[in-house]
Length: 488
Image (tube, rainbow, N blue to C red):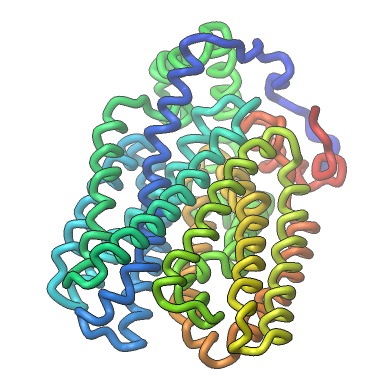
């Protein structure tokens, strides 16, 4: 049977009862807020190194190489944390896994704060990396699985907003501590210690939130799933959603199994995993996290003094939060594919503009640092408004339930490995080819990313996860009609 001839076997989402209003909506938003503390920790722990690295380098006697190791050890560990976190979440549940990640966040923070030297610091960063990688996989999946399809984009996208809020918090706290207590020995330890507070809040908060109803149904615990859904939906809507999820789960069990063999044996599942990998890698090859990790260094190279760069570095953090908040509004109004295409077109344009400006305005010119700062802020704004939220939302939506943790884990593993290698080699690249060459390089890569998204990214907006899932397992999601479909 061809894809076009494959019959639909699930209840159409238009026949679901309206979402409605009531106390369950407030409960849903509070559950999302607690879960996204994982995103806040993700952002803080990846962003704090931006300002902590300079004083840490002096106190611990780091060389250029060990400086790169301290930065990238978290990122390499995050790649494995993403893989492990996805598998554990499929086995033990999303909620239990996030509680375990909160413990890792706290343990890693304590290890780093009391680190006597390079070796222990790397161990602490590895522990944090496992937590960050796990959170980057499990939290978006949890949010997507508890969200109703009508607001899934904006609800799941809140995790990315919290990530950039965490990064901004790190930049602001670094600037305050660095400028007020910058002469104190061990000032970087104060910067790192702040992360213990949201880790404790996440651990305590997740004890009070429910398990993902979709995961419960995947484990055959249908009654428990209904009890959970009835606290975050109206009673009528909860019953209808449970029936729909259970029906698709039964269909999927015949076609997809939660093992590596599902990826090997189904060309459609294999293709969607490759698309997920491509989306994750393309996002990192914009160089966004190189700016977030080494922003102070880039701004110093642009012409700012050390303290001025620390303060100026807050500007990209602010625009990142504004962009992510705007992205949440866009998620329920503009197709995912359209958002990604606009995003890669705009970020690639800014890459070339930064390269041209750094080439055209000579070093020593007083306007050079400010022009480059404005363009970098424009790049970060474009990235956060059109790419980051849309990418993470799409990754949380496109995989079948039975292998969702495994598949997103594979995709995010590749994302983090790309991130890690950029974090490790970015200082070397800038040293070798300068700001000009570096951003021209990112611009050329952006053109390839734009072509990939245009030809491969599926559309998911305005559809239930079960509808997306059926079309993934049959290959219908790749037809021109569904990719170009505009939902009201």
